[in-house]
Length: 354
Image (tube, rainbow, N blue to C red; front, side, top):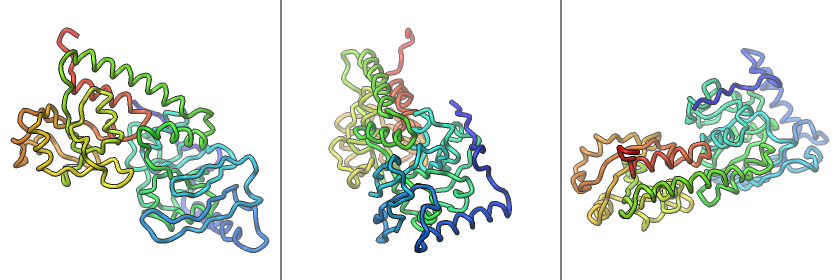
């Protein structure tokens, strides 16, 4: 599926050469002027309360609420604890997390994206600039965004650059990747930023589709016990999905039984859980049908590499298979049904008569 999305040029075209540098200095100059006594309202409406950054011991100062923030401004408290304001729904968005980008597309706002992250699927955004995880404030300001959307992990990498964006009047909102239970709230918050009246409605429709997948899984399974699954999230440390993670819920939707439900997340809110070879082989000894490897940025392990591991014989007759990481572990409204159907066909393949 390809989403033909190009950077909007109706309000602020990308400026080449010295013109781009001049524009940056103008924006930075305005940001400095706003901090001088008696100067206010020179920048777009923005209010973000100071907060301590994830992974740092520094607080990032930001402009207090004041005359520049209209009474009807859109207000959201992000996952870094800041109260963020937008004078109107965002129309020029830089998204630095692939899950956010895909959920913006799912909420029918693809045309508002002016740049995405390098981790985004190029097939979805073939014509948009792709930005690195380490934030380049000058490059982002040249795109004239009214919203930069990221996740706390990305935010912790570039606190200085984010402060520069905020001083230049760009609203920065940090939203953590949602868990299954928090997806409706996440979509409502994202919908607020986009001016979409009911972001949660799209999730309710997706749940109805997933119910059909579960019904089909039960039909194909019949009277047989559910397929027992171990999901390898990362091979080097042998991490699997945490019991409440997005991936664990998708395994269940597709009729699979996750054998590692007794493991605790690496930390609160983490989608990963540490397993270890000894515990894995214990699961296999009690019965394992599929050893499933998610392949992507976190794990590039192949089926052949799993077979070559010294403990692979301990997996018994388990079938070794792979699945793209973004289908099983990315909290994406755009992919959730596709991911569930891919797991369904892997766990309970159609018969030759179907």
